[in-house]
Image 1 (spheres, helix red, strand yellow):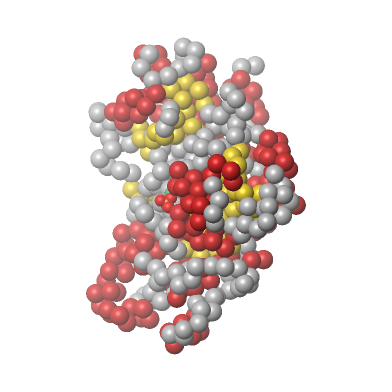
Image 2 (cartoon, helix red, strand yellow; image 1 turned 30 degrees about the vertical axis):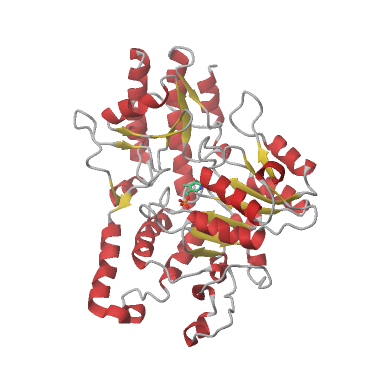
Length: 442
Ligand SMILES: *Cc1c(COP(=O)(O)O)cnc(C)c1O
């Protein structure tokens, strides 16, 4: 058995490397009609006019067709109603963020009271650390994954500094073994165990933006909590991608952006999760603003802050309605499709991509192509991180063929068949381009 046959059998899909097979998978796909809900970028065509294979939804998701309509509705209501739109718009602006709460909660596996959409991801990460990074006595350290997204590293380092600590002495990193790209759970648990009296907080990116690795969150949370360590997640690459159960897993807090898998548009609003058990912890320090204040008397303009229970109590400002409208348009699609079906299709699509690429890699010159992302549906979402011998240069060659991927330093090409708008035929087309490049030694 070749390695790809073995993996193919492990994931229980019987893939075949043919266009007919890809098309038959598309025909059987329960979610196939959702592709029609999105606009494929018309200007990102191949040099012969081919329509684009969009594999960059991990970076910026595509525009749902209904987004324009939803934003236009708010522009019209603003024109027609002015300030009265806060109460009399078709979707009144005053409670507007509540229209996306339940749908967001379903995406991340949370209770509605545990979720709020506000600000941007890094801002929310800071707000969460203000409340949940509480260094005390010996317990002052933070652990993140080595090579975490730079914004996370900066945020964590600045929080350490803010409390008078340093990256050098007080930051721990989950690090792959020499010669390996991804983390082993036993090593992660070991780091927690060995530092159980000194760690105050763990923040993990799930999935990791560079490697596409997904972690066994439940096991890690249990180990952290057993040692008295707070556990937070950055779900920039997890929300709308992984099947998440933040409430059941007992995660303390989580943050995510909505412009990647959640298709809410560039700079879209971020989400924030605070577990129910912290929702009434009004003694936690927090940086406050009027939108986090008790709704019943917010407009009486009281001078003492009285936080709302649940995640809403961390809000600062009245939110940008156009961005919320865009998020609402996209989340309605997620709600109809359902995360379980989205992930199930994603496992097949990504498994198909892996199957095709492994076959190509096995036939190509040694070292031409390798897959960094771990095998197995439990260890990843939709993204495959790839290493090509040609490095970054291959990205432009893909673009000439109408294939849109992205690149992250130092040498990683990320290819993500987002299940709501990518097809098996897209994946096959991508693989055929790689097959041709491999044969031509590009
Ligand atoms: C995309 C991403 C961010 C981006 O942060 P913003 O505040 O939305 O600019 C942060 N962290 C991770 C892990 C990301 O993937």
